[in-house]
Amino acid sequence: MDIEQIFKNNRSWVQKKLNLDAQYFENLSKGQNPEILYIGCSDSRVTAEELMGVDPGDAFVHRNIANMVPNTDLSAMSVIDYAVKHLEVKLIVVCGHYYCGGVKAAMQPADLGLLNPWLRNIRDVYRIHEKELNAIENEEERYKRLVELNVQEQCINVIKTAAVQKASKVREIAVHGWVFDIHSGKLIDLNIDFDSILKEIKEIYRLG
Ligand SMILES: [Zn+2]
Image (tube, rainbow, N blue to C red; front, top):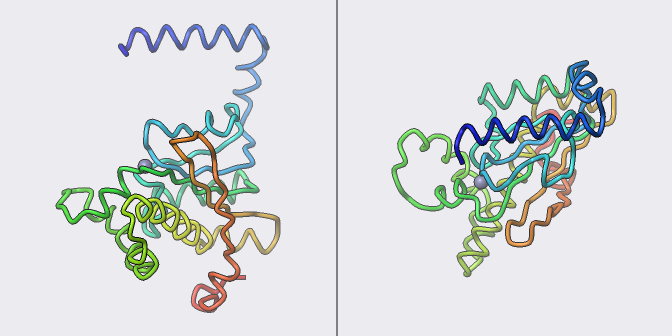
C-alpha cells in the first residue's frame, strides 16, 4: 500500500460518508460522547471499531502491545482517567486476542531490549497463575489461556485505578474482559467474576 493510495482512499471515504449524510463531519466536529473505553492490542489484525461494528465517535480507544494496563504507565492511566472522569464512559473493555505476538514473546526467555520491562508485566501474569498454566500440557492451549489471564489481570489493574473506584461509587460503570479469536473472527466475553477474584484482597486495594 502506498501513501498516495491512502489519501485516495480517504477522499472516497469522505465522499461515501457525505453521500449518506451531508452533515456527517459537521456533526462529528461538535464533540465526542463515547460510552465505551476499549483497551486493545496494537496488532494490525485486531481493529477496534471494525470488530465491534461501531462508528467514529462510539468508542474511546487505547492500544498498545498486548493490551496492557501497567499501573505506572502514564499513557494508559491518562486514557482511563480522561475516559472515566470527563467522557463518563459506562463500559471499559480490555480486549486481548489469541495468537498475540506480545504474549508469545513473553513466554520465551529472550532478551528483547526495550521490550523487556513491558513484557515483564506479562511474565508477572504467568507467575501469578503459574500452577494453572503449567498444568496445561498443550503449548497452544497454554498460550491461549495466558492471553485470557492477561486480560483478566489488566482488567483488575483498571478496577484498581482511583478514577474507576471513585466513579463506581456514584454511577454505573462496568469492566469487561474480552478476547478476539482471530481464527473465527468472533469476540468472546470471558465473563470474569471480579467480585469473587478480588474478595480476598479487597481491603488491600480498598475496593468498594
Ligand atoms: Zn497482540
